[in-house]
Picture 1: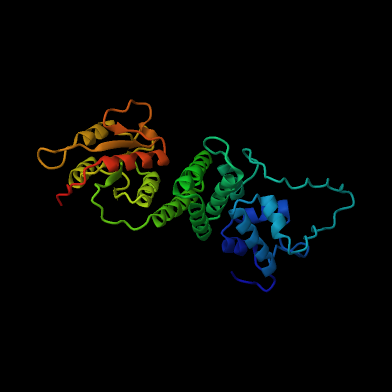
Picture 2 (picture 1 turned 180 degrees about the vertical axis):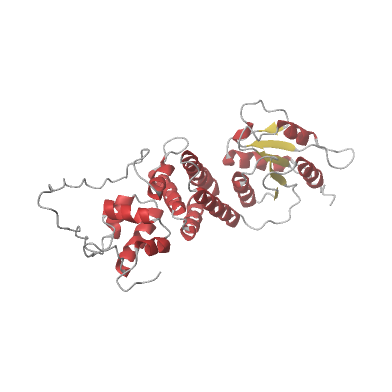
Length: 353
């Protein structure tokens, strides 16, 4: 940031904090989080003290505190700014008193503009039963940090969420719902702010990988994790891989859009205890491939076996599950199933590489 000698410009402060100038103006207008002193007719200039208040505001909102409450707390160490007064023509009527700030901003369509609207509303539409207030705050904190493109805060929040609530709860109750809500919000706004979804996905992926302990050699056949050929969404599989690592179960993660030929070769070479095929949408679900994988045989002559196939993701819904296949309902159920399948698998080495 550069200081002009009379304070910092709104643009410079916005770049420093990772928020939009529109958000700073909105905080000033709604909550009084603005320059402590201004001269009539001049552009806003922010002093170091003003910036410190904004930094505290960002920290509090990132932790899930509602903006109005965060603003009150951030202003605690500074006297309230007096509203700016400008001379009015004598013939002009006095304006009506401004309404008091809401404890929670309006979230209806068109009620606000810019990143502030998305950051305060998208995580409220959770999937499933009502959640406890702390979980809602965690979702809001993640989404607000993502909208500000605040990578360091995302890392801090994600680490704290996993440490406090555990991997499965962190994924099912906080990470996945926030990712879904962010995705829906950007789709409904004409694909704006796609960078926010990409940033959030990257930091969630990083948190999942950091959660998993280092893999160790095991006599147990691995679980093979792969997206079907047309599927690129890997985060749910990354959560499953991290969960398997926590349980000490070996896994081989092949990621997104695995070609059918490569999947066939991987199954034959590893002799897995189970093969997890992820499909996010019905358009990517590859039932013929799932049947083919279930029919692959491997092992020594006279004791050959077939892999158990786990159909993971909403893309597989709507069709009956064949014998030798399973369709778990979520991460927790998938980990319980794979733990059982791994315990039942033979321990003889089958890797021919």
